[in-house]
Image 1 (tube, one colour):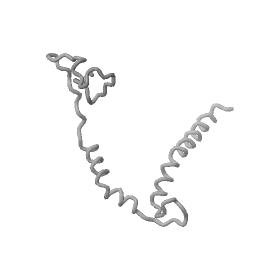
Image 2 (cartoon, rainbow, N blue to C red):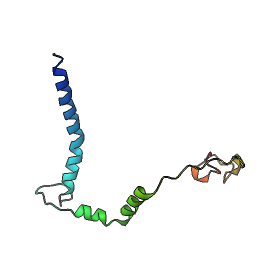
Image 3 (cartoon, rainbow, N blue to C red):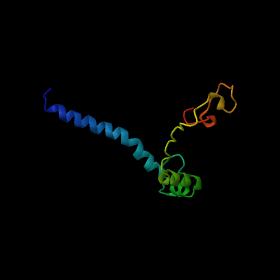
Image 4 (cartoon, helix red, strand yellow):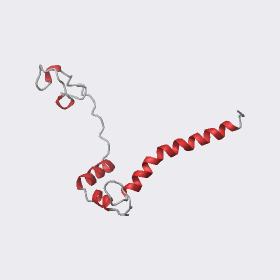
Length: 106
């Protein structure tokens, strides 16, 4: 094999990989424009699925929260109040969840 053929084979391999990765995305986009629920033929063009997504208030609220909320800074430990294992709610239980922790270190 000539060394000049190697870059050509690498380009072909790159194109094959890109097509394999993009094909599911393109097919989902095309099938989402079909009126049929199961992606059958004949193909009837519609944007009803996207209108339904636009009317979903929970989805729109979650999208707004994701795009507008700044990340919360992690609270720093307080040097005046050391962490105490007895400060757990339900002390003595072996399960320790983050929501019942006494401080950020627990």
